[in-house]
Length: 195
Image (cartoon, rainbow, N blue to C red; front, top):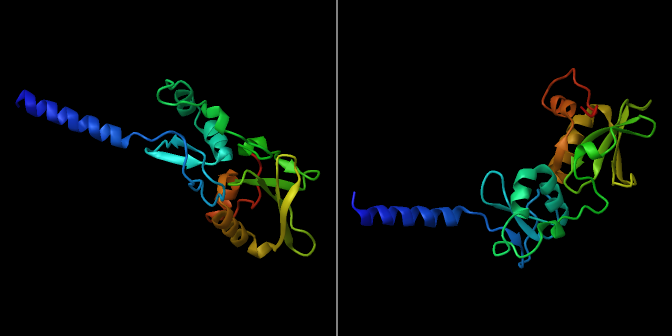
């Protein structure tokens, strides 16, 4: 192989690497947040673990920072010529949970159990036991534990309601027993135990 050809292959490989590198940093355009059904505008692009980049709103930048500490450390260490602003300035949580474990395992004197962390940063809970009318209560709460939404669902429709909630609102994290219950393990309870 000639030296010229070797250089052209190296140049091509370098060009491909540049094209595959994520475009990371603050966003100027009016882009939607890439986190499922989030309706907020994206403010910062982060390198996606699977390659490329993801564009996130301030809350999902904070969520990404919590979920990917090793990638975040590399972002923080980026030379100023690569990233003009501190990425931490774009990560704001507000009145939302960043991780499922941040939300209490139970609420209302242990009658409500944690189910999932919604894309909007709220925690979803369900009643541990159906009431006398055979209905299950579902509530979403923010970080202050204010109820932001609620629903009463017949016990025989609980799994269908949860699947619909996951599709409509998106879940960032879910309790393991809920996953088992939704995927056909009939012995698994519908609620979460925080494990």
